[in-house]
View: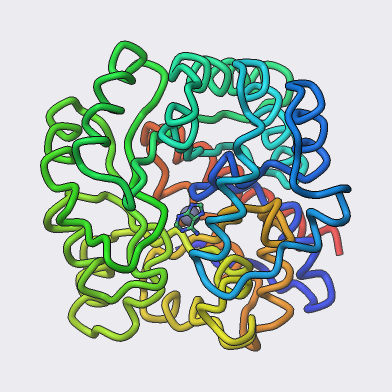
Length: 350
Ligand code: ADE
Ligand code: ZN
């Protein structure tokens, strides 16, 4: 086990912001800043329901997941052409690189776009090209995860998979997102089974607002390798034990959970409880343009709000992000060695 040398508490925010890390839970449509929504609406000659960037931003006050999703899908409607998807993804990757994200696994929601007549090729090729350019120009690696919208039917998910398959070399896995309550993982058992046969990685949102039973079925029915959110797992001791024993990671998003009222306040977040129970927890931004912060804001605000979080926890969270990623084992080892070297150098530079 690597022990972080002593670091003064007041240096913790700087440590958090400089740690090399992976981001494993980011919806690329949730990175669309109001300024870019306005620019794309103008470029595509589309009217917007809000008169200004400020007016749009001030509508970002949510009561629960659904009230957010309604505004998030409306925002995504300005994306029409391959270049729009490129610009959105490149902006996120450039921003993430500033937060010392060295690898990102990015969700995208093709059905949001194909339902409006946008070809799936425009979506995937635009995002993929941004990932390739960001790797060359910003030194950040990234891969794509195609998410099925769970409020739609399994038949619709199958049709989307069919459309995407000619581009299968451009995404590494599939996920499940959108309205959780009333849409259990079981609804997508067959499409996930097919994705498994195709050699795709599988993740699923579960236990964000929904019960621990949805986490069990994401694992058992969908064969999910990671759980997105999963914070409701604390209500089920047997489930917690399974997550720990099988090293199933949770991609937790503190500011999202605060803004969508999963927890009354950030100080009430259960991330430390999960971490201390031995769960492979990671910190992520979910939809940074809507929830008031990118990955480093999630780290720094959480550490400021929750008593007891230390430099050792910060190291563990960053380490977990590499362990839980879908990169080759040799790359994980390389990133973890870099992370440890950073902690040692940071402590000695006091
Ligand atoms: N789509 C974008 N963000 C989401 C979230 N937090 N939960 C479910 N679906 C989403
Ligand atoms: Zn999410």
